[in-house]
Image (tube, rainbow, N blue to C red; front, top):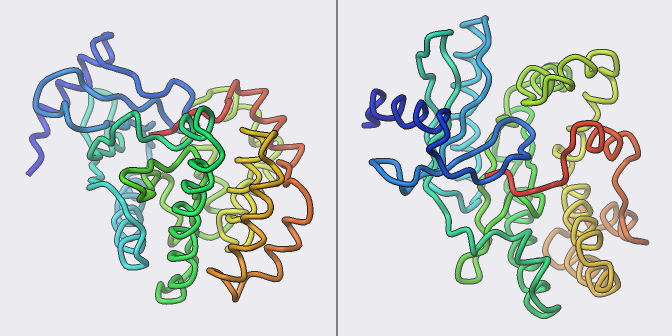
Length: 280
């Protein structure tokens, strides 16, 4: 049972500058790991609150359902708990997650390790993607997955996925577009986003498409290590029919050349100062 008072004190001390930031460039929050205390083995993610209590309750239910869906489809996930914490300004969503070794984060490893090692990590992450989509029809309703390189760690050769927010289950496309704006950590996104609502809503589409999630993984690798782009493309073209045969035809179309991010998304990233750092 989580000690809410101790967690609230830990968050308060972090906000006073006593925490260890994991990433300052997250899309929805800046996760941190306490340097000591009862949560020193956890990563804590504190999100913006909402004035609508019913919307918060729905979010909590959706998150529980999403973690259950990931587990049901075989996605390796650290122990993850979603809480609605009472603060002076109202309730805020908090995710408490078992910490993974920083040395295991896939993105920095992809940047510094050799080709053989990076291909092995791609295979491990690809197997998680295939595991999810090959079993996703067991899940009722609209469900998605955001398996970008920055959302994986690789421990002893096993890719572990750790990004459960926003919960990609139980929301329509339009509702998810609203969530992307409501929970953005960047105030500028909340101001400017509604003016470009259709494009903001479109950001999620890749997360709900099996072939596009695989293509997205390969594209990220090609951008991180352009000198190995040919090898990553070859891996993706071989992997799709081997591990995701139902989705291979469309995936192969997307892997005819190094995949690129949509122009509007790269524009949003530059506008918001987001450089794709790990979002634990």
